[in-house]
Image 1 (cartoon, helix red, strand yellow):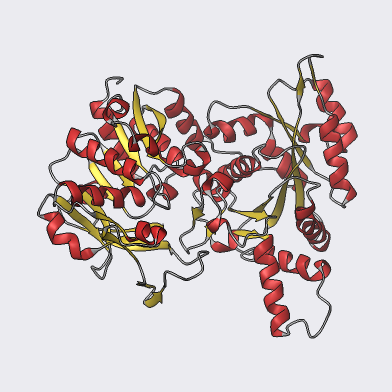
Image 2: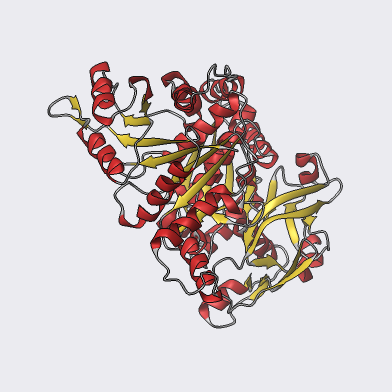
Length: 547
């Protein structure tokens, strides 16, 4: 049976609970333990799948097709443990499940209440897969004191009481603000945050304090005294140059030891941090630099492309170069020539997205990369716009476009080389969709197999002819246009097993021009960079003037 670590946050949001949870998971792995990480989000959306990227950042997708919080990406990148649908839950999903049971009559006519019915549903979620790992790390989204989070805090309080003594601990992440006028770090916000936590029956065993200044020993002692934790369980969390320093930084501060001490695990196995030493060496000792432009439509919020940015940094580690990412708004090219803006870069990446806004700019970016022989990686919509560009400018289909854009406009303006996917096969079952279906959870989601063309660039990059990658889209390249496009040098080098759905295209005779319908960034890790990103950065390095 797993031991549980519940990670909560206080004072303010965005302190890095997800990163702290992921780093702790990596440290426990380094000591030989198996881990799984979970996220409990208080919002009422069933999942983040229908949220705007400006609202919530990217949506992370699991192999089994769950749309989840971006923190699950951190969990995977730091531990290498593939997340599942059962590793992410929201208030919306909890309440939906409770109400479905009530409608079926499962509660035998009882009055349905937050306690015990909602809290029991949360506790049932926590126990899934508990016999598979040594440690289950559960992060509670939001901040203690938020009204929407109260059922989750009550559920973990009950859970801790019901488990055998020593099976659950609580880790609380807070902020120590620096007051410049007085030249002091202030502990009072943390004290009040812990007081709020204790008022609902939870006493933290480990206190992690974010601070931009060194925490003096006397302040640590004050925190230990007033927050009722051991002095060696007050852990400093300082700002870092790279998130991948976090496991080493938290280990130096004693986080993993404090957690093991709280569980009474003595003697604690010694950690093997060679993996993270190597990652740090590759980050801080690069042998050059490449500049890569991300031409997207959500560039005002970098978290919208979080996994892509991280995967590019992993590709840099694989090639021992620093990847300098520049965010370019695709709408800029609706009114300006892309050449002056894109010429300084060593490579161009066009990511996914939804809707017509910015797509003409993405098409122009793909055209620039194809004609100028600049390394290009198109992901999801970035692949589709590369196909549209080839159809317009190589195959003479001036009205080539996507059915998605006509659907938005309510009229037929384009010859749709990209069409709405209404039927596909997953696990030997046919899945059917309609344009008028609900938006949430209706895309082609999760891991699907693709077969790679022998002798193709992607087959060389992967070193395989059969791959499995994660998808999140509802529009596909229409296979009916394959012959016309391949005649112009756009090779369909990756296909679904039934040969109906194009998964990868590449431009023949180009140094590096690949578009993929899936999201390879979701499977990249610092210690195991995704082969597409590693080779994309290698191609950028080959033409860079900064290496």
